[in-house]
Amino acid sequence: MNLGKYSFGIGDRFGKQGVAQLAAMAAAAKQEVEITPVWNKSHREHTIIGTRPVAVRAEADEAAREMMWEGAYFVDADHINLKNVDLFLEASDFFTLDVADYIGQPAKKQEVDNFIDGCVKYIDGLTVPGIEGTLIVTENIARAIGINIYSR
Image 1 (cartoon, helix red, strand yellow):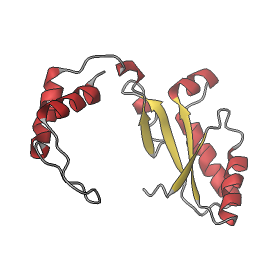
Image 2 (tube, helix red, strand yellow):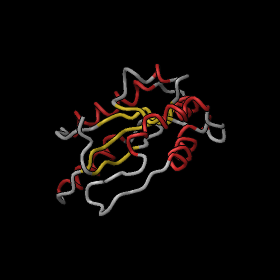
Image 3 (tube, one colour):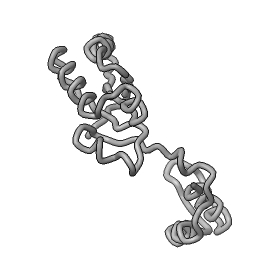
Image 4 (cartoon, one colour):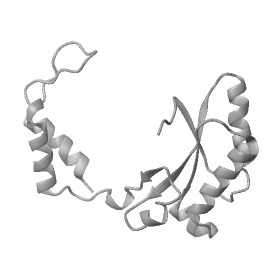
């Protein structure tokens, strides 16, 4: 999957503007700006509108056919979680996870400890290509990063 240098999320809630939105991408291409269109609709939006993820795929495919679109295009399962991912598997190319349920929850000690174990090779010296010098990473810094990553 090659998303391309520029992508644009097409949030067509009612599934009626796919051709018009793709026409905008075609107009950009005529100006030598290649944009990869990405249709997306969240589980919440599907629930409100009463649609299913396969409708987004159908709209994207139909718009591409009608416009004779030769470039790449994708469908994103937008703002999903483990409770509803199965609904999106068939129709989607990639998945944007909604982490809202995890905000403000403390990290589990074991997850942070596992993160630290994976960071041992960076403790006391990390070099990054293109950056002069060595970055100092202490266990306390790695632990703080791990707590932020795994806090739910």
